[in-house]
Amino acid sequence: MTEVCDVLVIGAGPAGLAAARAAATHGVDVVLVDMQARAGGQVWRQDVRRPEASPARKKFQALQARANLRWLGQAQVVAASPGQVLIEEAGLARELSYRALVLATGARELLLPFPGWTLPGVTGAGGLQALVKQGWPIAGQRVLIAGSGPLLLAAAATARAHGAKVVGIHEQAPAAELTRFAARLWRWPDKLAQAAALRARLAGVPYRGASWVCAAHGDGRVREVELETPRGRRRIAVDHLAVGYGLVPNTELAAQLGCALDTGSAHARVRVDDDLATSVAGIYAAGEACGIGGVDAARIEGEMAGHAAAGALDAARALRARREHARAFADLLPRHFALRAQVRQAATAQTVICRCEDVRLGQLDEHADWRAAKLATRCGMGSCQGRICGAALTELRGFAPSAATIASTPAAPAHGARPPVFPTRLASLAGLSYPAQDATAPPR
Image (tube, rainbow, N blue to C red; front, side, top):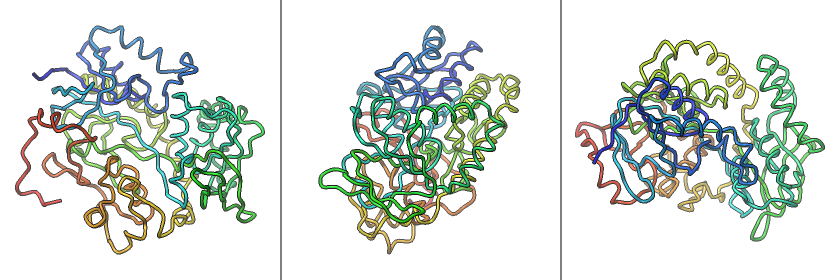
């Protein structure tokens, strides 16, 4: 049996929560879906030791009080076509049809491999935050944070708040760029205040520019980090290393739905117009899926998309100026935190690139593109479906679509995106009446 709703919102982070609230205020029937048990997404992930501090909690409680909103937690979309999705929840499959859809699928961390990055004790910077908030013991451990972007400060502050000894924050961008970035924050007072508050919480922790990880060393788990610094290479003893190079938009579901993607930068994002409508009628996108913009942009775009999906375009358009202001901040990030070539050169021929299928970088040298590499080595064909190694190889080898804009259709999706969106049971896929493959579409 297929359930029906007016507006379906996928993702319950800042953008999804704002979209669901905005749509629900117009009296339409809204369904909010997220793969986590609690709303908040990555940025507002609940801290099990400080549940009262979650900004998502109050917003979510207000949403749950509405009679026209249904919450599906621990549920994930495994297949989709315009007007209909297949959701797996608690091991059960259910079909849901919608009149309008808001994609608030967020982003994932960009991880760039280096020798030793698969050692136990090495995670992403965002990954460390998620682990610690879920109760992973970090108190008393020596933690080094490295990579690029504002996430490093947030990850370090979370680790320190839970008792970790943060031995240093190492940012690959030059110190002069960090100074120029800070000098432009006056246009966004909230961001300036947030940065100052984080730095105050990290008083005494060294924050070094032009410094990046070359390798991690250890026997059975990480023991030392090897860094390239303006004063030459040095080693630092650690118990945990967290390295992240920013975020990458999650576009897989949009691609399966036939939404056009913009590939003007290294990593594709969902193409939207000024009303946040995608190229597929009735489907909107908001937040990081449209390009990394931070929590403020996500909240505003979520609200815009929710209004638009409910048919209230005037309410959505009234927020355009605020969106432009928030997106202007996002434009600063690639300018001041551009990755230097040496970061991409840290991986050697023996470095594992695809952790799922145990594929090393040297095995990919003879392949010209992503498709050839997948067919010959199974790189990207494991349980993460290329979400980690695919983004890394875009940076390391330029394995990305070459067209400026990719227009996809459900029959010929962009980037080879096919169901399932996430690994699932055959019984779940059998429950979907998925459109037949277009016989004229080129093979992938």
